[in-house]
Length: 460
Image (cartoon, rainbow, N blue to C red):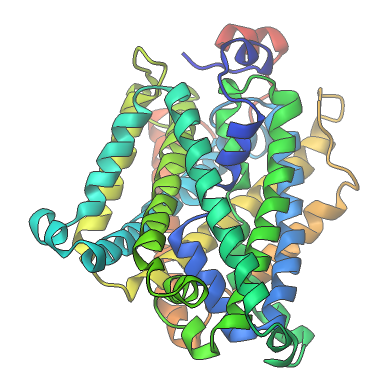
């Protein structure tokens, strides 16, 4: 049974502000992001730091849109619920499946490859015995999430605090001990170069809206959901800005664009003895990502099922209040994608950047949702209103379209990246048309009416 409204949710909710902030940043304090951010620092130096600032403005635009939408329609389905009311069930299904389920199926396997590669170095016997130890990590967090939201909150807060502390310490000590003059002198500042790196920088600032599917489990959603996203954005910009500055000050550019710059930076700051400790920290980062995605995306799947956008059995809960069928289906799908990839480290960048492309499409749709609902339903209750409307939304759409068009970090990767995006979009569009036309027999582009407060209470 879904907690649909903010009021009842507060009664049941176990997530305070700290856990919601941990959820907001849990997608990006991970190995793949640490690597991609340092890769960007190696490519652009001070231009990349400027790109992080530009990416932060784009991130602020989607935070403003999601904050208003989440409190206007406080449902676990998140972007699918908003889009169904704004643009119809067809695009609602596409936004959620391509922007979140597809992202999980592209990004998580890439992260699991990094876990297996790291464990192969640190514990080769384990890798030989198990084959893919990362699948054990996936199974562990599936079991933990099946225990309900309180278990998620306890684990998430510890994992994210550990990761943030590690990133800040490495960044702070790296800047203090490195050659800070190289931050400004490694490359001249060029606005065009900074713009060309925004696509890479935005990958470190996505996912703040992962608190929105958790709104039914928040203690004080009206106050804490927007606040968690804003705090999370500030923390991420500070942490990764410092981390990238440390990389530029400490490592040569060719080291920063290598396969494991995060390990090289830790060793440069702390010495060779840091290899094992940082390896453990990196695996904890992957665990943070798993915990966040399993909890948030499974609740999004649950909300879609309860809205008739997916098979109904995916909307059920177990006795702990966890969306058990959705969790199991998501974990199984991630495992099915991960296994055939083997240890192909070359696929990591194309998978993660393609995931970012799918995410940008979902953000553009969310901006459109807000614009449509502001004009179509101007009197609807909005506990949070995006300031300066519609400027952040228009700039967000234009900026994200630009980033999507220039998303490949190198020309030779453009083909595989856009091919992955096209495959995911093609599958989700085909499913959306089939489901809306032949299963629920709806016009894919006919928006639902905004539910009344009494209907929302009945849903909860």
